[in-house]
Length: 250
Image (tube, rainbow, N blue to C red; front, side, top):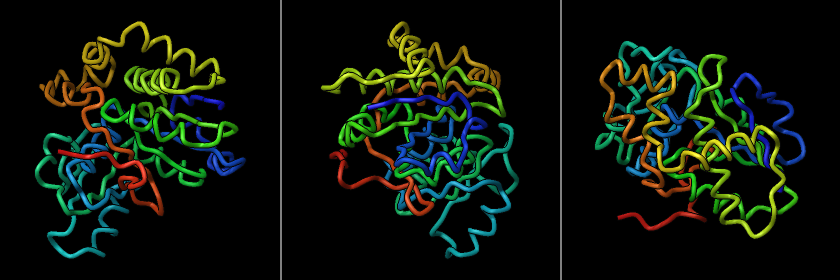
């Protein structure tokens, strides 16, 4: 099984993602994929990632009031009329509802990968569950792990999250993996810091922004390895839990 790593969403070529049955995994550790995974774990009906706030508002017109939540940010700033996409803020509000989510990086990355054979949504919260699902695919498959990055820049927290996922693949898999150089970089970054998730996230550029706004609880939440062990997939434009690999929730 080949494992490639893209370091930012700008490296995604949608037409190439649709070629040769590629399997995509998208990470935006701070914060979109963490928020999506958390919402699904909190029993949201589904999550719809959109490209921008205008699309989100148009889409919301298709729902009855009370059946959906609008959440989003643009360049880390709140969007008027939207909930801020903090998993802690949304916790307790999403059960049974559709979450329409607009973010600067993660939801855009998800939209760009939609043509892949399959798209997984991962984070530190559920990387091990994602790895187990990936290992069910044929050994000839090519896995493309995508770090959403931050407005064209590589994000430390996403590379660290990718390293956690790759480490889980290596440790759970029975066959050797063919890791690209970028994938190996993430793997060794995580291996050297596997007990330091919070410190790594806080030291990143985005983590520093969170800290400067007092969002330490969100940093702590996003650092909780395997705290939400669900397999999240994007299908027909909606993020849901894949029932084939669903695990018992308390």
